[in-house]
Length: 287
Image 1: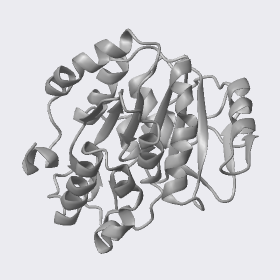
Image 2: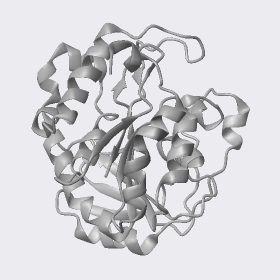
Image 3: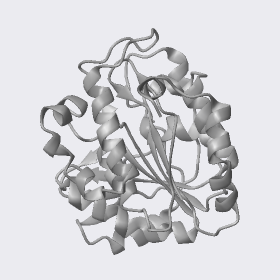
Image 4: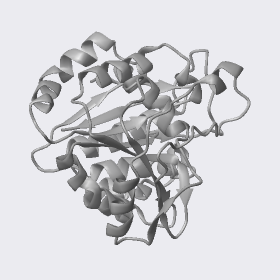
């Protein structure tokens, strides 16, 4: 794919055509795919564009999960891992200063307390426990409101421990990968490139920064080559990594999802494009 194609979102028809064989195979397998989603601005909950239509089309085509485990960049903990365990977790409007319609979006998906408790008891990388205070933050409900708008699939959120190394986050994905064989969709929600300080307009076209394109191409190339150890050491890119992720909370879900990859899995990009100069929207389907 050429550089200009990376900058612009591809047509939904082309995305669907490229994923058709993958999704057809997934529908015949008891094993669920896993996903990394670049969720972008919270306004995607109320916008209609190529990215939101890409999520909608993917949701219609995926096999129905028994549950969804969401690892969102917007639930950061330190020294522990928490899991939502309420029967009906609340929607958290954790983004301020947006138009009123955003705060009217509901996503009343049920929780899965038994599975949350099972996962908490099985974690070995960090102490883990269930939590009754958090709910679905915008890294989860913005995307799922398009993928599964009926909100009838149980959802668990798992917090991201910012004290864990990139290598440990990759290992966390490996530890969670067994859920795919139980019909659970593992979704990491973050941003492939995420620099809010240098972000341009959300609504007007902005030329992507050269460093955003370079990071996307370099790290995306590593993933294509399955050089996952390189991705775990993304900070070796120095200033390029710092520009792409001044803080690396939004990159952690990439590492989590790469940990779920098995040798027989295909890796398939969709929703490729860079918004607002510094927000790479590319998403990855594993399966």
